[in-house]
Length: 351
Image 1 (cartoon, rainbow, N blue to C red):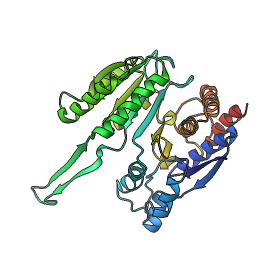
Image 2: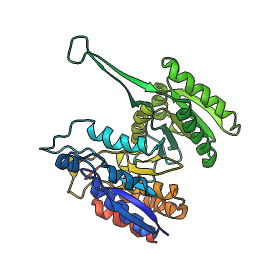
Image 3: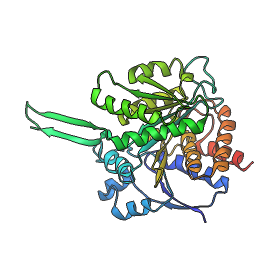
Image 4: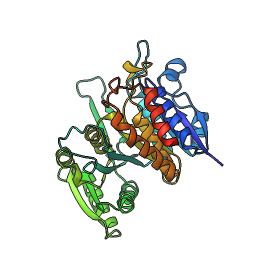
């Protein structure tokens, strides 16, 4: 019996990238039943709907979700900033309890790294971001709006349960990777003392159960300095939601850009969602010029999460073979069209 996969093509260049990811998925031979849902800017502009209850119920009944970028802005669209981001993207993460954001940071052969002299052996780590709490929890409000005394509060939320399950997942990941066997917690404990306290205590308490894993710490600002000088220092990194959102974009630059960066929003006990981390790039929509490799990488992550290790390895190997053939990693600068890149990866997967 195959896997039931929900597909959300997304906005802008999303459908073009997702089409190539599905082409590669088909090449693996893994049995899947695809269910496509039209969610995003177009649906909202036409109907006012963001995430209808019947569609959410169907998404919750799938084995995984494969999602394109959401939020393209086109002339004539009346979509205020944050409406789709909170009403769709965060809503899916929260309601499906996708409490882990998993970001592999790998420099593939042939991909230019902005750090001179660094090779794929130097850039190979994983960032684990707590994905349902922090500032993104939406705790706060505005008092005396529109007056000179207007006050806005956005409160960061860290629960023992939320921190512990993220930290524990990170220790398990460091053990399974079996590389440096090192876990680095990234926070700002010298200033954010309350959240820093709960993260530090949980990190070290749980760490006692993993004596084989080295514990490391870095302030978030210092980590940003370290990663662009010595990315080889890191194996697995764990951090809270907002810091994780920021440092993973920096990590994407280290591995060659948004065109190669993929992520998973995981509920290890439920439905997980896989996507590229880049945006919709509406200026390139319809030109067959966007780099689809990040969307293909999301397919690899999805297959690995579903337990299809051989298929995931085939996709990763195919990507490693194709990357050196691409001139650059930006949209319209690859030397090949979007569909040609997808064809090359799919052919490599088929062998």
